[in-house]
Length: 381
Length: 136
Image (cartoon, rainbow over all chains, first blue to last red; front, side):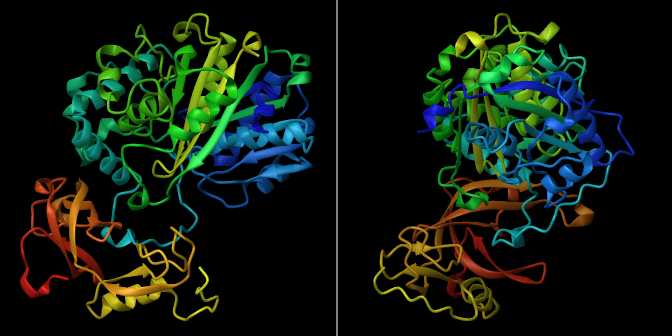
């Protein structure tokens, strides 16, 4: 059944804001600029939007706010919240809704002032972990990193390779927040936050907005930009709190990626560019393993010697990632937009030559939600 | 499943767990149908779906599955350990190992459970060394 979603929806517009220098704007105002740019990119009227897919960490009724703010009258809304992965999850929902005709122009969007504003979460459910005061979200990832190091001999230097590779990509992206050269030694010797993760193993805290417009593929060529097609998508979860994660070294991305690649009819070795949710350096290693780009336990070796940096064998997080480009609370939108822009060939100095297939993995909560998507150009349809 | 009760009992399992901790007792649930131990406390066994759960005492023995050190300024209380402990009966829980320097806690270390106090709240914590009859 789900195989019918392969190639059924296409991205026809994307919009990004700047990532710094937006003090005094609230999250809706930042999101609005991203939506304005996506609408312009798609060459549509904002009133054409009839499907809204959005969630964030600061309000509970997000799709209603968006409909009201933009004067929209949607026929389909989805405010599912799976954490930072949710926008990749929304890709699945939007493709299904477009396929069924529940909406015709789907908007997936996000905005946050988490760097310059006051970032308050709606109340979360109390859990049995609270009393131990884990420093969330860092502690769960630190526990995962410690276990990965124990089982596979992964080293601090290998974690640092992830941060340095991300920085090298960021230096090719004028929009990326971090532009200074970064060394393995600087990452390894950075102040510890939650051992074994130091300050430079952790992503940025940014402002930023992002928006994406999707339509059914049969009308995707009616828009000004080359359409980028959704070839595969799949969403999985296996826990919420970290003590309930079955195996700290294997994420649900293993199942999500396998299903997404099956839907797309491609294998990892055919992928030209990979965008994955690097909230912490360990994430990149875990997801490269779980998505099948290297065997389990080999992620540390795989990322070493610049293998995922510019000039390496696999371009990963080509915008600079959450570690060096942008991470405004939730990053899932930004990895999909980078994939689309790479496949459009719009990425200038950081452009991956002849990129036709891109894989994304969104991560939500404490490695809890994993959603993999595969995008392709028209010739991959 | 056939013996499951649909009756709602008051208080709920989380409150029972916390009430036991207040009395200095560490109890977890065990499914009377599939036999598995369940933690955290739930209305239903998350393995088989039965609501036939009973409260049981356990050995208190566990093994460190993973460990971390939360860095905190000395004036705010200093560094502390946050670990994941695999209980002998199967479930995994977050806790702290209290009698070892935070960075000396190691994966694979044998530990035993005690009901301690963290910031005025009763909580199950673990010790690496034998603590005599205080251990559960």
